[in-house]
Length: 193
Image (cartoon, rainbow, N blue to C red; front, side, top):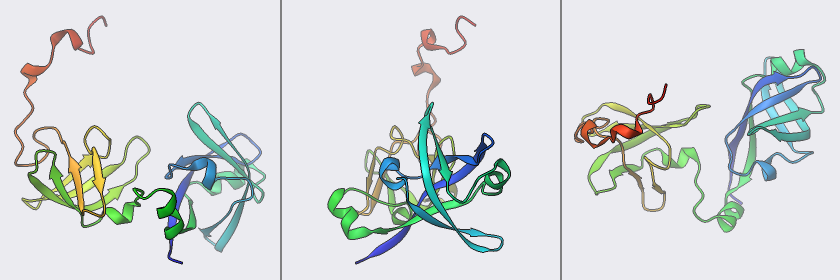
């Protein structure tokens, strides 16, 4: 059995007075990974600490969790920023979803433009609340932060060793700047303001 520690979520702000916390998800399977009774071991100032999920809920697109060991807002506030990780069986995961990948799998992959041009190599994937950033070492040696959204990164092929990207012009040295002439004036976001 091959396993890997996978980040499921990061604990966000305390919510309410009874110890509930918001979660910043890092999984595409929250219903499976955040089930009642799931136990997480987190790093704390006094050493490792165990958190057991009592309940989770989804409200207005945000996940919230209640842990058995946390009963007050003060306790919940102390958890902010803690990382919730689980040990995952990679073979079992591959059977369920053969196209699945983890952020650490991306490091070192070649980044190619959708037209086939080489753009660089993946250095890292930075996780942010609004959108994640694929950190690429460009061919010119520059560090480029490519928003990791489907429109700009349409394909990740871990087995093939490539990430296909369709970045806006000017982001990478070899790509021309985008022309503003292509923008239809009727689509201006300021119109009608």
